[in-house]
Image 1 (cartoon, rainbow, N blue to C red):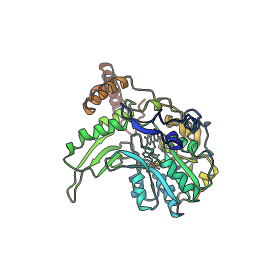
Image 2 (image 1 turned 180 degrees about the horizontal axis):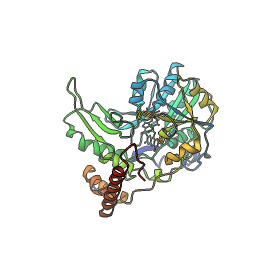
Image 3 (image 1 turned 30 degrees about the vertical axis):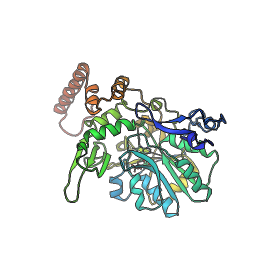
Image 4 (image 1 turned 90 degrees about the vertical axis):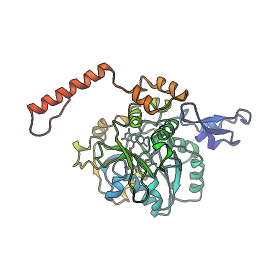
Length: 380
Ligand SMILES: Cc1cc2nc3c(=O)[nH]c(=O)nc-3n(C[C@H](O)[C@H](O)[C@H](O)COP(=O)(O)OP(=O)(O)OC[C@H]3O[C@@H](n4cnc5c(N)ncnc54)[C@H](O)[C@@H]3O)c2cc1C
């Protein structure tokens, strides 16, 4: 949406396509063919790939904030530092209908809304324009989002600002907001109860065994729908690449091409490098001196790690995922108005061959456990 916000005639609007993703649409009647939309397009002019200056493992010392963050909660530390300097923070938050938009915050209390990964495409709206307005008045700004959103911001701004810090996340890809809306309508107790919170990465059973949770609690009455991520249909569809935006399968913002000052990720494989308590660890990639200075001013005790070694455990840093073979079948039914929950369960049902393979690996695991009853056995 760099194009929509740069357009001098405001003839580019953001609308949902039939698969439910946000896209810019040009009103050809109003267009004066000035070419600015193409000049600011991050897809037509991708940035160079980038290797971090340093790579660190870190966690937020505040256990409550860490528990509510998807990895180690480092994002909140950075955001708090910016707010404490009188700055403004942009990030992804839920709207009133549990869709996701990029929005801003200027107080520590407001930062709660950015915490935690929300697995759907966030609406950028006019936030590049709003961000520029803050930057032009000299206010310190932290803008966060997916690598493509940061790349879009940089192209929109078309110049460097000393008072801008950008933070992107390593991104698997974004699911369709239309599919999310439909899924929520199907599972949210058919509108009988108001949703209080949605967590895609609830850590009550640990960081690795994260749960998908919808909280409907009202007053003292607790009511929560929770399912393990590998059993929840929406999470399975996301993680098996069934419902991602087509651009995510050929992401032009991988390998640091988002050009953010700091990149955050889940530190998968952390147990091989540091003492790991399964409460979540952030992998922090400091890409610029500006990003390094902000990170160093946060109250945090990081551990240096080797980028080449740790990135072996996180293929999303480099690689786009491939579309699930049944993606087209899924969206053909979705476009016709079929429900999504049962459709996902049906399409992701393991084939006969996969079931046999799963059974074989379970038997193999059980045999190894019997043969090596003491200590852990690596299955592979
Ligand atoms: C769609 C998506 C896919 C991801 N895929 C991977 C992956 O494959 N591998 C990996 O290592 N890490 C991935 N992450 C990043 C990771 O899960 C954490 O978000 C990141 O490590 C920051 O964690 P934190 O604990 O510091 O902060 P948190 O509080 O967990 O994260 C907050 C940050 O996430 C941003 N955010 C949340 N939802 C969205 C959204 N829908 N769109 C844009 N920004 C959003 C907020 O703006 C804020 O900057 C993904 C995140 C998202 C949103």
